[in-house]
Amino acid sequence: MSETAELEADLEGPVSPPRDNGEIVFAAPWERRVFGITIALCRSGGCEWETFRGRLIARIGEDEQRAYWLSWALALEDVLASSGTVGGGELEERHLRLLARPHGHDH
Amino acid sequence: MSEPDKSAVRVEALEALLVEKGLVDPRVVDEVIEHYENNVGSMNGARVVARAWTDAKFRERLLADGTAAVAEFGFGGPEGQLIVAVENTPEVHNVVVCTLCSCYPWPLLGLPPAWYKSAEYRSRVVAEPRAVLTELGVEVSPDRRIRVWDSSAEARYLVLPERPAGTDHLDVDALAGLVTRDSMIGVGRPLAASGDAR
Image (cartoon, rainbow over all chains, first blue to last red; front, side, top):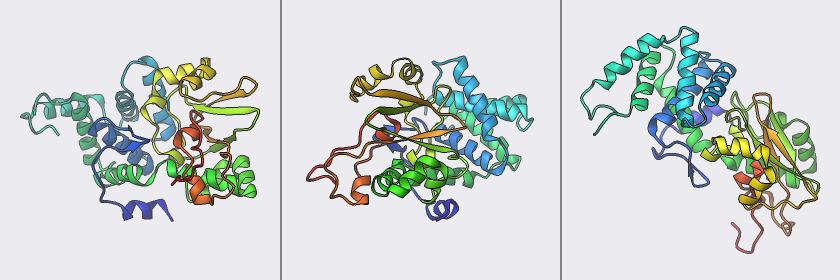
């Protein structure tokens, strides 16, 4: 049974947060999204897992109080900025543009 | 809605740029998430443990080369390389942590729970494992050594817990039902066999 087959077999699923032994793994939709983006990038070769892991360790280490998935998101930004894939400037610009949308369109 | 969540919008912006650059397909992102939400969980690890309890040759293979042994079940892949199984014995109780981040055998246990990633667990289980285990309800007798395994990219550890007493009559599927996620991290024990165990 290949993983790809499993993936394609199950495209419909509940949108509730995953629970493992009753504990929520993702507290907000953006956390599961940034996880999915990272893994998809690693699979397509857009990001080396080991490089990402190094950045994640650095981001966790610089502020142990920061929420885990926030460190994760920052680490992904670091990887993409240092490889020149997504520059900090263009991300900032897009972020501000999306923030400026009328409220209610921010999902 | 009220104020937009800045982190959520940041991730949205990042994904939009990656999609425009042709580096990410949103459908693949959806598939990855669904896969980890629905297909990957600690039941995979439980099947591996139950097999090791009932099949001595498999147990040997698992302890010798965890990655190859779990691949017999079809478990593995890019996020689960280098699985190392460590066996609890009368002399040693094993417990797993990732001191630097959150390395974890995803294909066997699913994604790590929040406490596994917490600064408190990552630091305290190394400094005072016996105390942490006691707080978690796992009493390890004083004459038993506790080994703390620090997961990394080089090795993601899976604890092979002790088979509960009084389970000789159970088949491999029933045994798998006794294997908890926490017992495979070393911070819990398998469930006891009981008349009405599922």
